[in-house]
Image 1 (tube, one colour):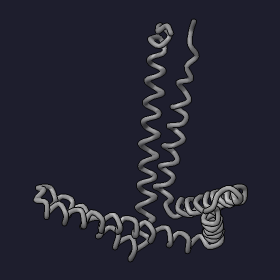
Image 2 (cartoon, helix red, strand yellow; image 1 turned 180 degrees about the vertical axis):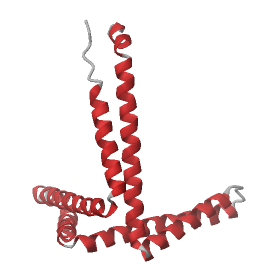
Image 3 (tube, helix red, strand yellow; image 1 turned 45 degrees about the vertical axis):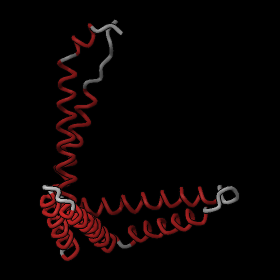
Image 4 (spheres, one colour; image 1 turned 135 degrees about the vertical axis):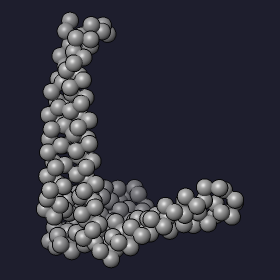
Length: 184
């Protein structure tokens, strides 16, 4: 019995992701606006879900107010990102800097502890933390670079994902005869 193999699905998915990646890299500002809008919509949906969860579990869950407060904050933040996309974009870019900076500080503390323990690779952890702190400062004080970096990384990731899916589809097409010979 011959197996139906939809080899064209990964190729189609690959071409779509490849095209999206090229678009994101070529149009980073427009892509960032769409990204911020998407985050705003997702925050609203998650906030509604958390608020509904809090409402329906209010009689059984003692900490339901925490979920309700978090849900309301997420809804408010989502609405804010939709209403003020430029400010939302700046907040997102600065938040990226804060997250990378926090990681850098944590790695700095780890490097100091590793040095105290005479671990030989502490200098590499210190070097990474220095780069993270430098990148965080760039993201915080020059947020446009942070957004451009985010969109470039996202675009390149989509291109790589698209290429790998296309390769998978091509290899599936080439392997149809072999796959059909395998009995399950």
